[in-house]
Length: 204
Image 1 (cartoon, one colour):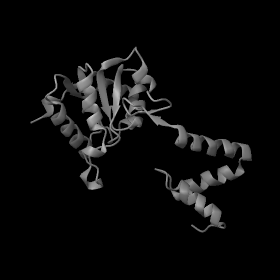
Image 2 (tube, one colour; image 1 turned 60 degrees about the horizontal axis):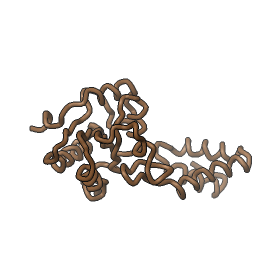
Image 3 (cartoon, helix red, strand yellow; image 1 turned 120 degrees about the vertical axis):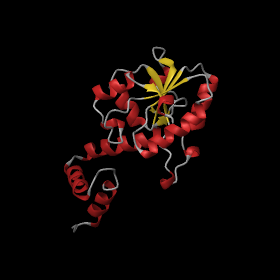
């Protein structure tokens, strides 16, 4: 792709680093911004800067939050004895959109993936264990993607949690996740949470 401006090329390169954004889409976004007023561009860049500078991670579940504790963990209406373990914030949003789950969450921040150099110590696994030790937890739902990395992480977590007096469940696997919970429609995902099964059934 030939550019008439070095600044244009530089901006397109930066937008092209975003997930799912190719060169053509990046160029279209940059040209769109160039057509906007200075005030509109300032609001756009200001929102990004504010996000980066002020965003927090919940001290309890590690979900993205505006405060030290997210609204879900702070809510007295939630079932704090049930913890749903997910990969990242996108999964929390997907499950919340189903309106089928009233427990709380624990965001791991990724999945175990030796090929990518991600091990258990890189994830928020120890804080999960501490939550179970300190609080009266009755059930942990392992809501991770149906991929090799997801299954590896679930098995590792099961081995770490099986000696606690809690129920360990997984969401129904008879659906096509495509590897990502965020891409499952709300009805299907809601049913998979409601029909979750004990993980022991899946362990040979």
